[in-house]
Image (tube, rainbow, N blue to C red; front, side, top):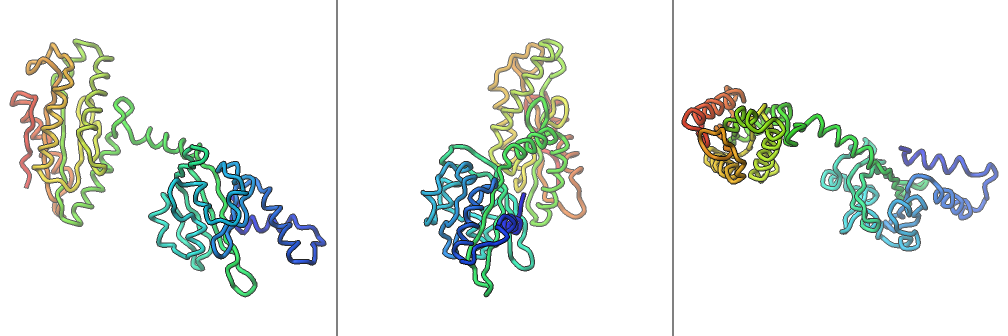
Length: 338
């Protein structure tokens, strides 16, 4: 993407060798050239009123320049409710807003000039959701007075969707759509360290589909895959908080990480899962416990300390799951953890 300085260079480069002596004429020529840049661009004056809304910006937003020039409504091109655009952040020097306004951004340089940021925008007029990369920078006169802020935009939607698809391939289990084992391990490590810093409990649930090998032998592997998908969906519905993670642990085993959750809270979730799986009423003629598919679950929680590690929590919960299966399956057993 071209920077603000490159755009200014493009304008100067296209000025004729014998530019008009009149400053206004030179300014008008520069504005006309900017109108035809292929990069969506708008310019605000020092009072944050739109002075340029080029043709590429019209195509991107669906809003004609006539509706924008002279107003401070540039935000309408990208958001359904009022909020600052990157050009506003530059004009107001409110760099502390960047984290709240943009999904990704580059920190301002040592001189506080141009900014780069990226974000999903709803684009209310055209009715589409686009991922835009945005550059904005100030223009000063010879006396250091702010005269304009230029913002350029690049539609990165296709690239972002491809990136997200690749991320999903790497992070999700291909069969069930929940997180895979690698994602679980990374999440567990992060949450362990986070809970250790603030001395809050971390809960772990490990569940196993009862008599699943027998289910596969009886109904076939395709039905077995359908069963695993249904259970993964059930677990995802039973876990409400964004911070929690449902994952496929391996085979017919599923695991759930729940930060800032004590044993009582985690046990309640596990009991809810156990009941929800029964209510699926997936017939299982080979089960020795129940006429439909069930789950056994082990659950534990501990406050991470410097002398402990995630493997200890997993080991304790795995042992609880073992006891649940040997106690007759279709139940929840809590782990013995300090």
